[in-house]
Structure formats: structure tokens, C-alpha cells
Length: 207
Image 1 (cartoon, rainbow, N blue to C red):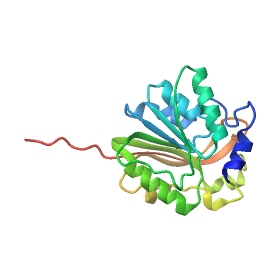
Image 2: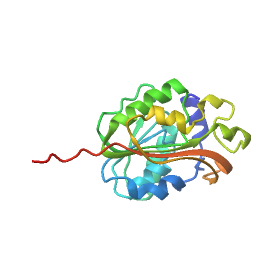
Image 3: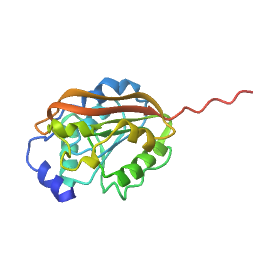
């Protein structure tokens, strides 16, 4: 899926995945420390705007300039600001130790790129920072209610994520089925994996 695919999908006034934040993100937003947040594959900005409304300085990265333009407009409607970066994640550098949270909602990558991006994301967290993700699992193929079901190797398992995010402490780690009602493109019963993993906090030196 190249930028032109997503530019065409995000064209028009409607928000493909809605304007409300992802439910898993909403439920665990209080566990994100104060500080800057990086949203990868952020599309039209619903999650970035939600996080900005909670006081975070948010950078939204996506390969679709059309999606990010809508993200900025959505933020402006709420009197908020986002930093947006149009980039292919294969070439986007995640600065080490820079982020209080990195949020990845329904982003599906081929395994080599996924490992590259998520390894860099784990290193990109500040001490105490969290990596928060929801994505579809291979069981989503039988539901067909969203996600790259025609390319199952892009679907995620908890076991794969534990490998990609080695060194983080998994506070939430589950595969389950739930009703996803997030815009016209994500509607219905779905098989998902949910992860909230934290980088270990540095211990204070003792005299």
C-alpha cells in the first residue's frame, strides 16, 4: 500500500476511521506519562488529536499527505496543534530516548519493516515511557471487518510483538475478540492484539 493508495482513501470530507480515538488508547491514556508522544501511521489524526487534548505535544507520522492535512484540520477544529511528518516509515528515524509514548493503532507492516520500526520504537522511549498498540491478528481473516486480510503476513501476534519489543515490560498483553466501531472502515467483530509495554524507569542512585 503506497502513498497514492492512502491519499485516495483519505480523499473527501468523511473520516474513514472516524474522529473519536481508538477505544484501547482511550482506556489506557492515563498510563501515558507527561511529555511528547509519537503516533506512527496516524492517518487522519483521530488519536493524535485526542492525545493533544490531554496536553501532550504530539507528532503524527504517515505516508499520506492527504491524511495528515485532515489531521491538522481536525486539530484546528478543537483549538489544538499537531506536528505532522509525511514519511515512509522505512526511512523515518525515531530518535532514541525521545518519547514519553509511541502509539501505533491498526498499523500493519510486512515483518522485516515491522521489526525495524518497532525495535527503533522501543529504543525511542524515555525511561518510563510506553509503547501502545492495537492491531489485527491472523484470526481477523475469518471476520473480514478491516485490516489487510488479503495479506495475512502483515497481521500481528502477541508472540511476534514480544520479540519486536524485547526489553520492554509488558503491562497489558492480550489477544481477544471485540466489536470495533471506529469509522466505516473498521466496523464489526474483530480479532485483535493489544499491548501496552513500558521502558524500565531508571533507578535513582543511592548514596
